[in-house]
Amino acid sequence: MTASGKKIRLILADDEPVARAGIRAILSQANDIEVIGEAQDGFEAKRMVAELRPRILLLDLRMPGPRPAELEKWVRENYPETVALVLTAHDRDAYLANMIDAGVSGYLTKSASDFQLIDALRRTAQGTIYFDEEQISRAAHWNEEVGNKWKKLTEREREVLQLLAQGADNKAIASELSITARTVESHVAHILAELEVDSRQKAALWMVANFPDEMTMDGG
Image 1 (tube, rainbow, N blue to C red):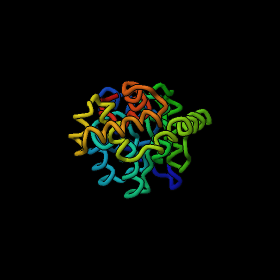
Image 2: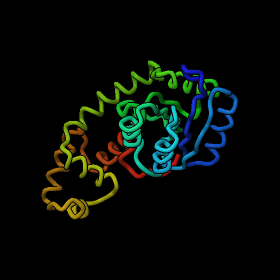
Image 3: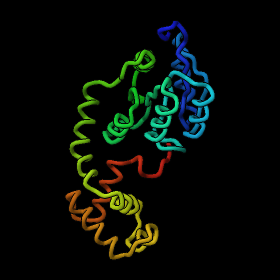
Image 4: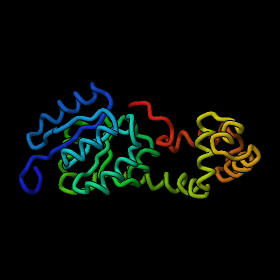
């Protein structure tokens, strides 16, 4: 229950119907938690938050629609009474660090026990931030090792790196960004130097590994 004695009203956002059904079954064990809506993508989640004003948005990371960090920012700015808790199959440091930076109230993997999930929901409903020491340490390490390199890149270089990671060659990157191929070459050279890698392929792998939210969202 919330501090006022009311049930914890929750929207469940996950693009997998089987996953939603499983989570709903777990939450049915808690008589103080009420699933008031289910969203299968980020757009539907936004609409439901606006219409239903839940206390918690239980959010999967890899689903169609706005990127999770963007969705969390929108919720926080427009509906501060709603808090977001991530429940995902992905336990990569990049996801964890990005979502902590975005301001979510907690981060759980789908391997969490029924008790852990229900406990996390109850705690975040009361305003508690639900991260353990290991998660905080991992996120801090990721920010130190990866975030500092990312910050050294200009906005244009980040755009080049994203396209490079999607498999684009210099000509395609130049066309997409309306710059010359020679300018692309210069950007790529600086990117390799800042990331401390010696090939485009390694730079692309670095981007995919560390900034998965910038890549195509494809479920999970």
